[in-house]
Length: 246
Image (cartoon, rainbow, N blue to C red; front, side, top):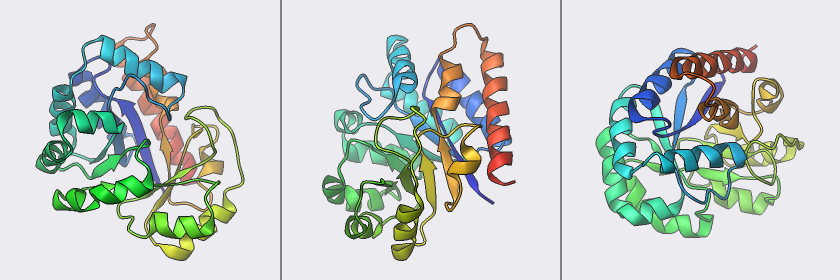
């Protein structure tokens, strides 16, 4: 069974909504939740997720909101934090990971943490039973891929193209998938540009897909009620899960 990883922005429009949405997504096929930590300069994210971050910050998002939400979701489904190093530094990396261990978070996805720097944090992540998700991209050589995936654990994030999330580009990923498989059996999930229209193509040769902008576009649609947002996002999740396993 191919896995569906779903990204949503924490606390948009509020904490209780995020919890309700996450649990509905689980019921409709999302296997793993990637909970986005709102940040003012999300360099790897496209305009949809960037707007969602800024909206949450404008609403008054604080890290205490992240922890409150996490405490209610993580016991019910596999969950990762997705955020930028500034948030971890601000709270204290070890303090952050202590919270993650307390609630059962599986790990973190930190797109602005280069591999060479992430090595410094490997032991403290292990200490608190969490992993740093490795990224691989079409621009990586086989030699670099071997290094990137050597200590990978929960899953590997395959960036489908060079650029930002949500832009919908397409590249031939067969060579990079083959290279990753040479060095690890860790599950490999494709992200960037995945939606209900591209998911079946993007899941070829990998173990699952990561979907963000296709969900978050409904979070930032202020013409929808909260119930309508949950209904639409859940329907998209259900459709994607069916397509990647058909």
